[in-house]
Length: 190
Image (cartoon, rainbow, N blue to C red; front, top):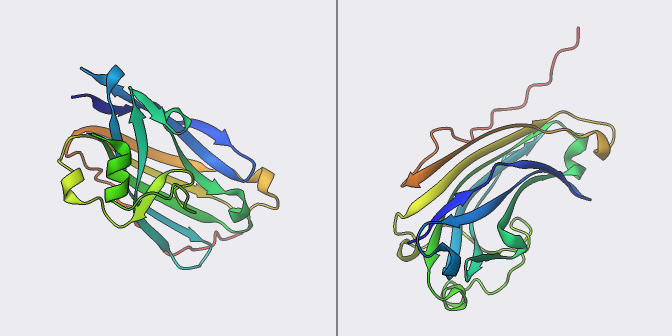
C-alpha cells in the first residue's frame, strides 16, 4: 500500500495570512493509481497577548484520485492571520496524517463530512473531534509539530513568524513535543 510523506515547509504570505506550506506525496507500490483519503488529525492552539488559549480539535481530509491530491495538489498550509499583528502571540499545531484507501465520496458521506468549508480548515472537508477508529488503522503516518510566535507590530505587513517545527514518519509515530502555551509575560524594557 502507498505510504504518505510530506515535503519540506516553504514560507508563504497570502493576502490575509502568513505561515508555511508543505505538499503531500504518496510513495511506494500503487502510489500513482491510488484512490482514497488522506486524513489529518489536528490539535490547534493559539493565544494572543494575555488572552485565553483557544483550542480546536478536528480532523480534515484530502481526496486522492488516481494518485493526485485534491484540492490544491495536496498543499497543507499552517497559517496565522495577519490581523493578529496587534498583539504578540503563539500558534501551535500538532498533527498526524495517513492515507486510507477507498471510495472518497462514500467515506465523506458516512462521516457526514460533505461540507468542504470551515473557518479552521479552509476548503478541506473537516469535522470536530477525532477520526473514528475504523478509519485510523495505525498505518504509516506523518506526524508534525509546528509552533509559530510573533511580536506585536504596527502593521500587518511587518508581522514576522518565528517557527519551530519537527516532522516524523512511521507507524504510530508521535511527536514528543506538546503545544503547551504558557501565560504571556511582556518583555521588560530597560
